[in-house]
Amino acid sequence: MASAPQVPNLPPEPSETQRAMDAAAASERARAKKLEEEEADMSADELRAVLKRERHRTGRIAADLAALKSASVQSQLEAEVIEEGRINGLMRRLDDVQQEKGRIIVELEREEEMVSVIGPLRSMVSVISNQFLTRVDTPPCHTSNS
Image 1 (cartoon, helix red, strand yellow):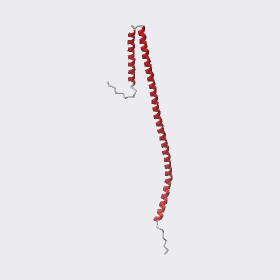
Image 2 (tube, helix red, strand yellow; image 1 turned 60 degrees about the vertical axis):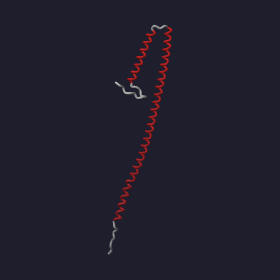
Image 3 (cartoon, one colour; image 1 turned 30 degrees about the horizontal axis):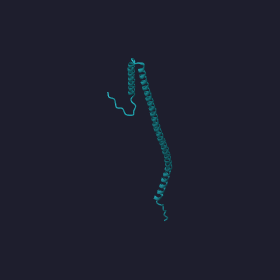
Image 4 (cartoon, helix red, strand yellow; image 1 turned 90 degrees about the vertical axis):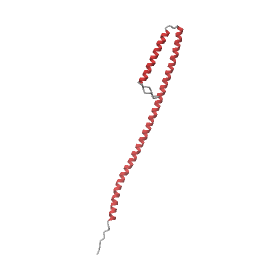
């Protein structure tokens, strides 16, 4: 069964992480068992040399662990900065949208006010215009005095 290739900079699947940890633990157990077998026939001076190497190895492992913890903390801080930047950008955009909404509401209210003023004016103009046209179209009444 072939697994899909991993995308760079993404954390491995939890099952892959667990498998890697299990493999590292098994490898260390096998190394420790092998060393115990070798140390069974060693003299005190040889054991002191082995102890010195193990202390040196432990020191390197502790330094590696500290570096990994530091890198993890740094990565978390960078992720938080990026997330905060995104949130701030979204908040600015939300403020812009709210300001635009307020501007549109004010503009709409002005237009409604204009419509409420213009509507009756149009009716009045229509009435006046009809009255004027009625007067112009009606011939004057001439009374004849014959």
